Image (cartoon, rainbow over the protein chains, first blue to last red):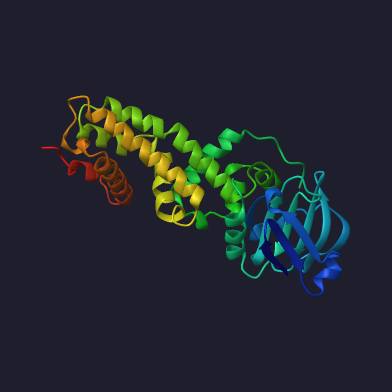
Length: 118
Length: 179
């Protein structure tokens, strides 16, 4: 599970609990200017994750860490597909963050309303 | 899954207009977008950034492509009844249904959507304003706001009556008559 919040003009994604170990990461800080949008997307866990490097992938249980698919680096931290949130980035190390949050709908609204423009 | 396939962005946006014009925004999942639009999920995110990004592109497309069609109808209609008749059954209404839904469900919670809806309604009002100066316009065209509101209301009724109508657009037979 991750906690997503906005501080000033940055989006902060905190990886909580043991997921820090699985994902080998505890916190991501992204300038809002590099955030293109956020979408609640339970179906995305059915997609191919690509190559894991590094991270943890136990199909059906947890996908956490960095994965590379079609030349894009994607960060995953999802146990429960129903709460998957996709955050699309630009000009960042990761093209996309796919994280599990307590309330995907509220988090989408938080992120979309914080974006400078579309 | 393989590499993201190439796709025609304009075609995807047009297909999204139809999807969003007929279903509530929250009722359209990314799974459905992927299967209806025939686009790889990664490509969808890469191109539009989010579901909302695609929605805004769809809304802007119909405001840029279809509102002008409606405006042309207003400008050449011989009277208000003819204008309503043509407009509520116009092909361009696929996009205008999206405008209706956007006005109801997304504009109150999304500023960008609210601005686009406002822009569309203003340009319809302005078209009526221009038309009413041309001499043959009926009473209702003297009030651009009233005309646009009636137009949207009639389209809403046409949509609501689709399953019960014997044929055509029943509400128009009893539509407002300028006399």
